[in-house]
Amino acid sequence: MSFRSACTHWFALWLFSASVLAAPPAGVVSVSHPDAAAAGARILAEGGNAIDAAAAVQFALNVVEPQSSGIGGGGFMMIHLAKTGETFIVDSRERAPAKASAGMFSPGGLPMVFKLASTTGLAVGVPGTLRGVDTALTRWGTKKLADTLAPAIELAEHGFRVNRILAAEIANDGGRTQLQPETAAIFRPAGVPLKEGDLLVQPELAKTFKLIAAKGPDVFYQGPLAQAIVNAQQRSRSELGVAGTGRMTLADLEQYRVAIREPLIGHYRGFALVTMPPPSSGGLTLLQILGMLERFPLGDAAQGYGFGSPKTLHVMIEAMRLAFADRSVWIGDDNAVPVPRTGLLHPEYIEMRGAQIKTDSRMKDPLPGYPVRWDNVADVQPKPSRIKEESPQTTHFTVIDRWGNVVSYTSTIEYTWGSGITVPGYGFLLNNELTDFNFLPSQDAAVHNPGANDVAPGKRPRSSMSPTLLFKDGKLVAVYGTPGGTTIINTLLGITINLIDHGMTLQQAIDAPRLSVTQPTGEIRCEGGEDFMQPRFSISTQDALRKLGHVGLGAAGTDECKQKMGSVQGIGIDPATSSSYGAADLRREGTVITVGP
Ligand code: GLU
Image 1 (spheres, protein in one colour):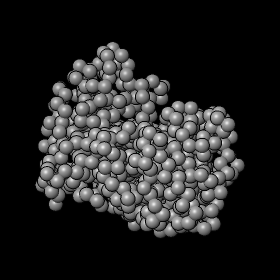
Image 2 (cartoon, protein in one colour):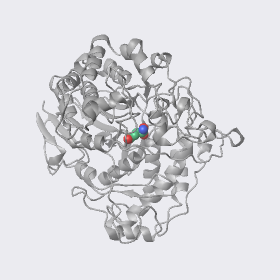
Image 3 (cartoon, rainbow, N blue to C red):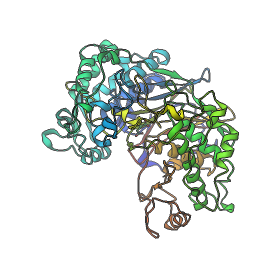
Image 4 (cartoon, rainbow, N blue to C red):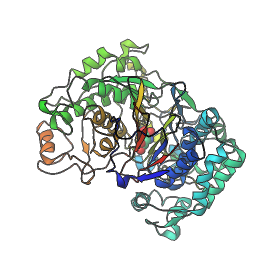
């Protein structure tokens, strides 16, 4: 077994160069935390397949990265089976309870303040992660649920060392670990925030995992544990009173079902992308942006393009603005409201939308387009819904086994620390996923607006999470995904372009600085300020964008590209040798472990 943490990223991981290593197929895990990566590697070393290993990683992440994902949340687990070539997604996204209603985040017609709403029981969706992992294991795994829980139980029972990421999230928690005594007791024992290097032992979480290992997943969805979840989410904030009380009942938990989904497939410059359909907006929006960019020679520095040039960034920003205008009205859970998938990706429609991009000037704020004529969807006159705050702190990991089966899994409790509510006696956090719905309902019969992302009973809130596979000539060449709320889409765009247009290795593609625009109005967020983010977006590049009228970058001559975005864990596969190479993100403690055959 060879171990490589992201701090040794200079070991180049050539994605497309067959000559570098011709090792026989090995298993690889790429995870944002070394202890969770080790959990997955252990299962692979014990003969498990990628699905088994992914289950172990997810449970371990609940222990060592509890602020980002866990059994109190949901996610999208993309599975690619080597034998049949099939790809599908186990959708364990949280669902709105039966008593949820369109206006529940806007009592009296006014939207709640996000921070308040997201830290009450009202925000808690019916959790799906455990059901999702168990479904995947039962159908495609080879190990028992209890075997995959074993590493997590050990980590929770014996403890692990708090890393710099977790310590920083506790220190800068925006109050979220301090609102509920059960949460504070874990992360701020005796009122003192845990710091890097402290040992964190979680006996209640260990007990919960042992219970699940002994009794199976139903123990979570029925009986005393389910009752404890229901009770915990009845908490509200005094400022919101009864309006902030959770609406989940025992019946909602008992009736929770995962969905098995077909992926969305699109093409870019001869590569096929296999990505996430609704209820994620990620795949559709990513493919729209790529479609609009195909007309520009993004890789050609001689024509003024190339990585990070103002010309490249400008056309990327314009395509993002157009696609996000569509996203705001057309995309939601299409089990509840039809999404015009065909139209949004139709070449004629993409051509029409992309034609608005001028290389030498910034367009006026774009409106959503009308892609309905290619789908059996009512001709609506939508008005955009406001895009709310979303957290950058979900998690993504990738696993491949020696047989070539792949899992690419983005998993979340929504905001960092989710709702901040720990289930008393059970030691895990509940999500605040329902805040991904529109706070103000947009459904409007007069103009046929279906309210694609309005709250409704049983519905899944619109997501951006998009585990993605990249194929060339029918062969899988890369697997990646990231957290980051709406910025997920633009981080995945950047990785895809870095690989295909800029000829980067997967590790270089991950290390490169990122830029994101998630509103038609176009406020730019961009990265920099860390040595590994190379090449940078220079001040002169930022000035060139300012000159074109782009917004969000502040005053001329200043360096505003200082943010951090996402955490990409990926795997590249050499099509010639079938060797797999992990690549992980320094923005967290991304770790790659290779398990030899
Ligand atoms: N709730 C977000 C979504 O589903 C995920 C948050 C994140 O990525 O950090 O898109």
